Image (cartoon, rainbow, N blue to C red; front, side, top):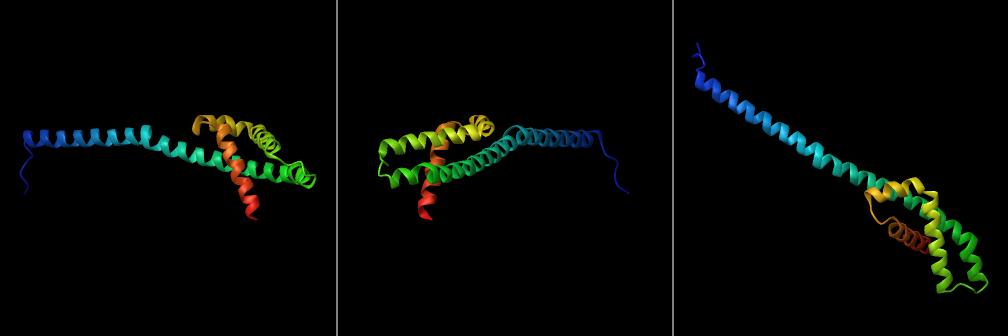
Amino acid sequence: MAAPITSVELQILEDVLSAFGLAFGGAVTYLTTKVVPKYIHSKTAQNVIDNLSTIAESVVENFNQAIVSDAKANGVWNAALAAKVKQDAVNAVLSQGAKLAKLAEKVVGDVPELVSTLIEQAVAATKAK
């Protein structure tokens, strides 16, 4: 037969359980306030970037068909026109993805710069085809 638990042993057991409860509560608090929001933030950021990238690819394809190819065929394609077309493409992506752009401001930061980079990537991908 086991010996009865003394009040000292009971107090130690309660203290250990209390410490475990505090540690567990602290871990849950850390996860819900630090780790999970960062994961959600990074997942949201990646989704926003992916969707803006898809819009950028579509805009670049459209601009290549409607503007760039004609300008090159007519011999009027130059650096100034290229810069204007790029800015127009950035504006088109921001307009078509207005809701995404608002979300991107919160999770990514400099949205026009991001879109500009996505446009450049889409142009490079088009040239690589």
